Image 1 (cartoon, one colour):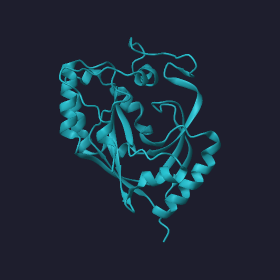
Image 2: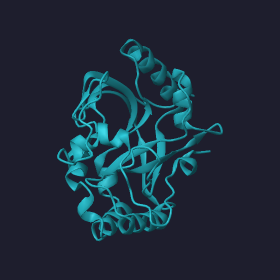
Image 3: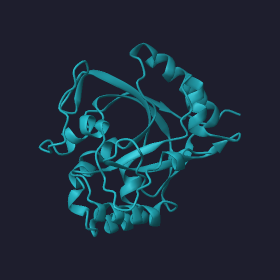
Length: 244
């Protein structure tokens, strides 16, 4: 049902990790401002050094930091990451700074004029289906934002569809089948040896469930950067209980 396989980055022998434009513009300035690949601004866009003037709104699935940090599997993965040859190129401080803002985006770019409607529609849906159970699997590196390592989210199925697809359908946006919690961020590009080591680690962990939890609410959040360092809740939409 999910789209992770088609979106996964496949590395060829001898290939290194090179940051794409999206990462260089939106993330790298906040991860490693002095890196020569940083794109500090682009004509016609309101980005400047990783932040933007106009507030963006998104519908997200928040996940509590404790659910991640207290997981034995995540702790084992973290040990493997920190024991790797590429460990110095991971921005470990960003993991700590973002711990209270962990989320997977269900719908980005929500117009301000649609916020109240989205909140009401999603509330109606959650009143019908209740809290949503999810599991997160091992690290995922995609073909976009090539300096970010994610945890892919697998939501429970309801009536043959994944629960977040139902949420997306309810507010009239495309069903993505792709829900990613951005977690690790690269300070520098990886050489071929480091890339091979990361690819091997991902292969070892990709099918392992690292977190199981229940999502008691969804959130419309506002932010002025794509790392959500400035994120704040516009509205929390709680699952008040399944309607019979």
